[in-house]
Length: 121
Image 1 (cartoon, rainbow, N blue to C red):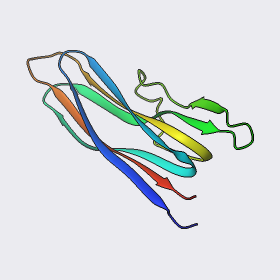
Image 2 (image 1 turned 135 degrees about the vertical axis):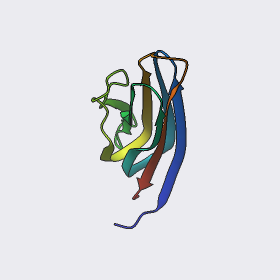
Image 3 (image 1 turned 90 degrees about the horizontal axis):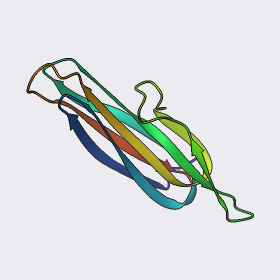
Image 4 (image 1 turned 120 degrees about the horizontal axis):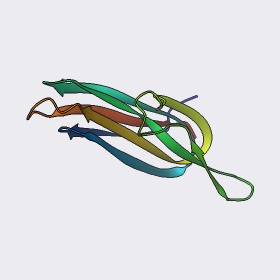
């Protein structure tokens, strides 16, 4: 199956004495996709943790044209975001990044991630 398109972006986030989360949406024509999220870097001077993955994706029914959202992860939970999704008729993917700094000083905890979607249609 040849790759017809590739969408990707980088995201960074940080937190100081708290939890910080953010999401990023990709809107694409309905396609067969393989989407991945990968932590590529971190910087912490205190105790902290980071997480990255896929929060949800949306499929369009080719017969009715109606969209159905598939929630696959929880941005507020460190171990509840899948790193990859493969499915057909997908027209939107929402990625998430979370950073937690436990607040033991005046320094931040930072994370960097790469999000990509390989399109096969």
